[in-house]
Image (cartoon, rainbow, N blue to C red):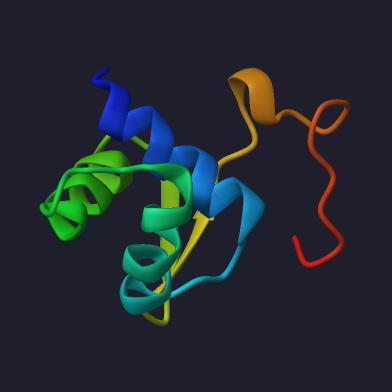
Length: 75
């Protein structure tokens, strides 16, 4: 897993239900230098790290995002 991949997961975890456009804008706040964010999102969905529904993204609750570590009210 690349650093940019992990950073994008962090962006989505902190902003559940964000669109690609929102994630791209927020990525600058997380110092993500990669401009292939749509490709990273697609890869993360393929790896079952993210869930995509209605053009919005959520982090799957596994690893460090399990219930006891991450409990966002919108999820």
